[in-house]
Image (cartoon, rainbow, N blue to C red; front, side, top):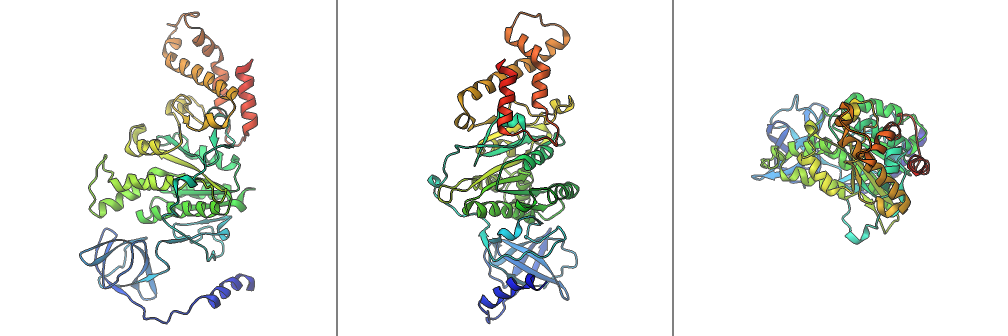
Length: 441
């Protein structure tokens, strides 16, 4: 037990002693979680505490200024908050806790443990907005990334340092697919950000992965849907900052964000609360810009040799692939996987729509033979799906289209190749070999 206190006592002894006066402000107004505080000058991004009862306080984050007052947003409920409550700053503004101490742990958006374990002690910090580097510091994607999913490895091969989106409507299997990738992917560190999801889903994910063989190299940052929007946004920044920290130390990191749409929803709530006009279907410009800023922080680092391979789920509201969040994510990502509700209803899992899915770096990381086989598979699948109604009605006459004839003959084997049980792991080499065996003969 004494060993747990040794690093804390050492840091207290090494830290400077602050004997300056403690400044505080007063709550002047409260509207839907948005606080106006007078008498306290702190920068945007600073964390503060609001005293709402004797010996108790609430956390709040500075998000702007207005008419000489500091605008803050609570990270929790506003119950028992009263006018004139004292507010004081704490911590260092714009910095988030990171480090090896978080490996094997599940934390919330503030970096506090939610897995029932001991408190996490780490002196390392990272800017919440990331460390801006030159565009030339991002080395190109040249190595394949093994996901453990046969359809993705063979037909939309990912690269180390690539940013990929998994796009689908609700209930089509996005979370199941990223669960398979988190289990089967080859990476030094796995950072999982469960942002705005169901609390039951968070509990299930932590139970599965915090007891698995990869526990010691996994970090879970979970902020369920019932939490404040700025806490959800802070959770996404914490997960990304954690990934950047390990990349700066030369590690290969897999960053999974579920979901990018919930992050945009949180940014939309904050933007509308600050009076920003809704532009694209209610999304203010800052909400869509938040997606771009988060995604651009992933990638390879030429300086450290590390990498962050980003996997982001994107919820298509109403299965609309032209939704502003989906369209913005598709334009900035290096590839996208589209899950089809029709395929899911036929019992194909994962329900990957190969014709609509794309990896923009695949041609740079796989041999020409593999590229040719993948194109053949796509052509056969697209040909069958385009004429599926004619085939089922018996209106197609065999011999009219040789490619369609082959697609009909191979349909069951093609569908079986795309399907994969949730617990199975098929590595990159086996995936390519099975694709060659399917089409090469």
